[in-house]
Each structure stands twice: as structure tokens, then as C-alpha cells.
Image (cartoon, rainbow, N blue to C red; front, side):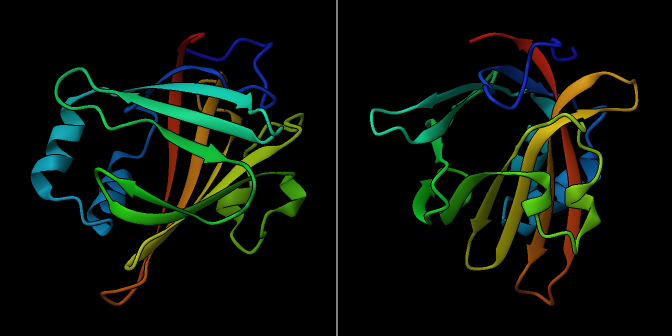
Amino acid sequence: MSLPETFTMADLSGKFSLNKILTDSAAADRILAGQGVGLLKRKAFNLVSPVMHLKHYKDADGVESVEIEHHLHQGDSPPPETRRMTWVEEDVDTKIFGKIKTKTRRVALTDLDDSDSFLTTGWETDCASLIQSDLYADKWTSVQVWGIEEVESGERRHTRRVKFTQTDKGGGVVHCRFVYDYLGSV
């Protein structure tokens, strides 16, 4: 389902489901494999349709944050994760990837590194700002840019463009655009 016209990057709050038809599943699988997720878990991921609840807010100190709750139809849901938009590196212990480092910020399109056009093209022109979230582990890095795009069907969708770089095993880069269906408000 497409985003309502009133939905903007100023408030990402809502319920979203990964659209597996519009998302490059092969690239997503290569990213999960590069992050050390085993074959059985990757196959299980392809069988479920996880739903994300995003709560976008400012805390008592005025720090903008997005809390992400992943809801799986069956099995264990991981604990919520919070992305604080301070561009300060934080240590996070995740259920799937183990210990990683992350930093997140709000950016204008012109502030993104334009050496990789995959991350900088396709966004709505009236998108005032995007969210960049960088994740680091011992063997990989992932740069994510979140925003709003018109996808193949001409519908406005929340998307995340990911540049995944394998830093061990000879390296390698995988690009993937994750496309989400809007399910309504939280």
C-alpha cells in the first residue's frame, strides 16, 4: 500500500511491511549472508512477512529518534532498536548480527556522498531530508539511506537504499533497495 500524500520524512511513525515483490530479494539474501546469517535463518526470513512499527519522536533532551519494533508472524521478535539521530557512534548488541556499531543522522540529499549514485538517486524531489544510518561490524559495513520514492507502479513508498560492503573474504559491494508497504498509523 502506498503512503498517504500527507506522509513526510518529518514523521516516519507508522506500520510497515517489507514488500518482497518490489524488493530485490536476491540482493537482500546476499546482504544477510555477508552479515553471517545462516542459510536456514535466511530461508525462514523468506517465508515470513515481518512488520515494523516505527515511532518517530524527540526525547526530553530534544534528540530526534526512531524506535523500530519488528513483529514476526511466528517465532521470536527481536527487542526494539532505537536510532538516535545524533551522528554519534553507539554500540548495539543485536539478536541477529551480534555486536555492531551504529550512527544515524538526518541529512539533505546534497549532504550524501555522491560517489555512489545508487544512494543519491530516485528520491522524491520534495523530500526535505533523508535519514542516513551507518552500521559497522568486524566483517562488514552497511550505509542505509531512508526516504520516500515513487516506485515502479508510480506509488509513493517508504524505501531504504542500502550499500553493503563486505570487508573480509575479499570484499565486495551489494546494493539493495528495500521497499515497504504502509499499513497505517501506530
